[in-house]
Image (cartoon, helix red, strand yellow):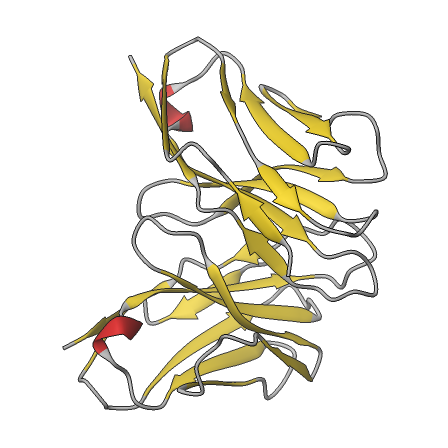
Length: 116
Length: 114
């Protein structure tokens, strides 16, 4: 089964600064989907950004961008101009490719603290 | 608004007493998932449905069962809850694979076992 590894249990960043959260994954597939989800304390899990493995261009959503390195099986999340509202658990997730199931698997998460 | 709704938000049950958690969706998504999330851990996939096709994870205990009577509803039944089953249970939906459809999550049900 595919595994997702987030090696940083906790990270902190100063407000308005930039932070990068790491994620690596293990798969034998060439086509798949990758996601970053945000889970604020006691709140719903919400999508931050997504990336298709067949796309070379890194996804960007406003202040959030990814560095997708397919050969290295790395998918890091960069948060620019960090805001207090960015404080949350961040989960990296891998979704199986078309025809290989619909399961989505998550990493252990990184708790991000934003300091004012 | 289209959404995923989980009831109840908090559930307390006694050791060994069967409990059912419910999930409904107005998104008309084909795929529905149940995840177990313990404190400060990743959500762990228990099983998922693609329409009525049930997919059980190999390491999901037999104590956990699921039902999906129609597209909109999905239930998680815990037949004999143990103390180790105390967790947040997350329901999620998505469109089928073939696109990069994300999962849409409900607010979760926090289960306490006394």
